[in-house]
Image (tube, rainbow, N blue to C red; front, top):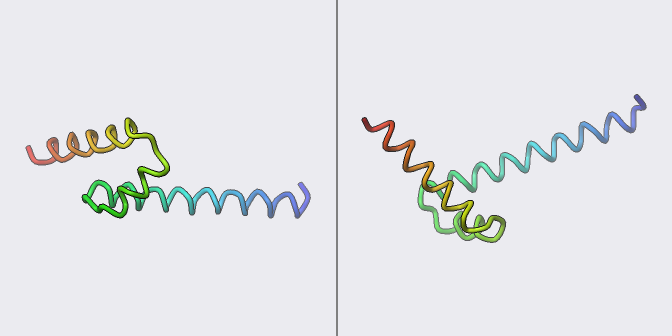
Length: 66
């Protein structure tokens, strides 16, 4: 593998990881009822997906409280 190809692959993986971390922080904000995070999430995900995230969070909370 050439050095340039290796560096490009590493760079791409780092960008993917950074994007995943960013999305994770937005989702966490939505789960904590952060309106700014919800506004951001609504611009990048369809409403049915956001609803699923919220329902799953409620299920986790309910399971942990029993």
